Every structure is written in structure tokens, then in C-alpha cells.
Image (cartoon, rainbow, N blue to C red):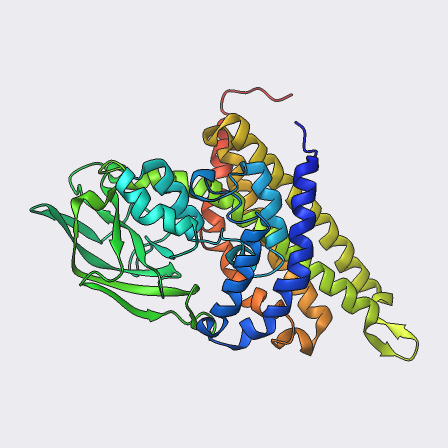
Length: 401
């Protein structure tokens, strides 16, 4: 198991970090205070610069304009980009588009790829992923009320979705809906591409997250599908394979999330240490001299390192042995890294005191929006129970001395 970083990747990471410090992090104050639409012209200019540097769309297919990095390589890139909430967007590999690109590349027809995949990778359009439902448990994705019923050559979609990230301004949605109600729960749903200008696609609102609605790409939409009619050729992959495709999408997606969280941990840790060194608390004394602050810093440093190595190991295992062999590792990192992220951000905020509660640093933003890390892509408790069952199964016929 070799985790050494190639010379090529070292150069790429250095270029990204320099660009982040010089061009992206300075945009954060405006991002925290202005509607997303107001930032678009400047963000597009930064994206143009990234393309000139030939660093655009790191994980996406080269055929459509990406760099086609493998999972381990993109894990390192995702860590670097995660230092700012704008990093992945400006480099063309933001959620939920990144996951939609993956499944369109694997399951899309030639027509779907030219209509949706190519402009998505090129950054000309955005998309959303419409699976979570208001009345159904997100922890059990086979429980769905949204239906897509065949009528002639079309699907007629009805249902209510929410937490469809980036629906505001998206050109199309990939919708998970029941198409085969009499099949087993795992073969009942399909994925269907729905252009957002289709009659019956209704973006009801951007959901307020701890007091912040967001807008544009940085938002989470509630969508009402009312007799929304799309052609059956918009089916993505085989009918009844929605759950299977969703699981394929979530595996690499969790690696991406976790490495992004490591990047956020690194940013919060840097801010915490800088604040501790520079914050005068009495003549000649700074926060860094307090043992409790030193303990927080030591614990956070250890846990960030542990979390990072766990994620890289899971990525290596997935890339070399496959998703099935890495399943337990993916569950482990999902709940472990989310917990570390919450601890590091909370510690950094505590060290900043009243400043940390304001939007004068990025910490309050991270605290608000990344609390959800323990919920989305499978709540922590589900992953813990799943891991425990698999671990215990290995002991059923095993003699321990």
C-alpha cells in the first residue's frame, strides 16, 4: 500500500494551494454576504483562469474537457479545494454536479451525454439530484412516494422532494422515482432526467438552513413535481436500477466529501492556531499559552491526521479492490471524519470567541452548514450499525483465546 504522492500531483497540489490563497479565499467575505448571482461574473473569471491553467474538472472524463484524475489523485485535490467553500465550484467539480457527471458518464445514452454531460463538465450548465423526500426517511432510500408512471411514450412524474442541492438555477434534475411499484423495493425505482423548464417542475423554495436560505448553486431546494411530463428516453440507465445507481454514486461521493471535510479541518485548524498565537489575553500573554488551548490543538492535530489516513486508505481500497471490498471502510470514514470535522470547527470557533460567531471569518459558515455532514449521505447512526453488524458477523463462528 503506497501512499506516496507523485511529482505530477505534488505540482498540481502546489498550484491549487497557491491559487486558493491568491484568488479564491479573498472572495469569501462577498460570498458570505451577497446573493450568489452577484458573485457569478467574478466566479466565472476565476473558472476561466483555472481552465487556462489546465486544472479544470479534475475527476471528470478527458473526452469532455476534464483532467480524468483517478480516485486517489482526486482525493488529494479535494482536500486542497476543501479549504474554501468556493474551491470545488471554481474548479468545476462541485456537488451535486460531480456525482451526476459520474452516473451520466456510466449510464447515459449518447444523446444524453451530448445534451447534458458535455455542457455539465464544461461548466456551461448546472444540475441537481432529486432523491430525498419530505415525508420519507432519507436513511432508507428505498422508501419513496414520488412516482414516474408511463403514459404513451412519456413518464408522468408526481411527488415532492427536498434538499435537492443547487436546484436554484439548475438546467436539469436527476429524479429518483418509483417506476415499478410491484417489484422488490430495491428494483422499484428508476432515475429520470428532468429539464427544469418542464411544465410541472416547481421549485417551491430554497430551504432555510439555520437561518440562511442561500441562492443559486449554494442552496437546497424543495421541489414539487406535478404531472411533470418527460419522454421515456430520459430514463437514466435500466428501468428499476435507481437504487443500484444511487449506491454507485454514493461510494466515490463519500470519499470526495470526506477529503473535502479534511480540507475544511485544515483551514479551521490553521485559523485556530493563528488566533491562539496572536490573541493577547493580558499583557505579555496570548491564548496559545493556555494549556487547555494546547490540548485542543494537539487533539485536533492527531484526529485530522488519523481521519486523513483513513480516507486515503479507503480511497486506495476502493480504487484497487473495488467498492464492495471498501464498503466497511467507506462507512467508517463517513461517521468518523464528520465527527472530527465538527470537533475541529467547534474548537476553532471557541478559540475565536465572539469573532468566531460572526461572519468575519469562515468558521461560522462551516459550523452552520457542515453540521449536516453527520446527516447527509447516510446518517452516522446507520453507518455505525452497519459496520457493527459486519464486524460481529466475523465473530459468529470464531474462537477467540
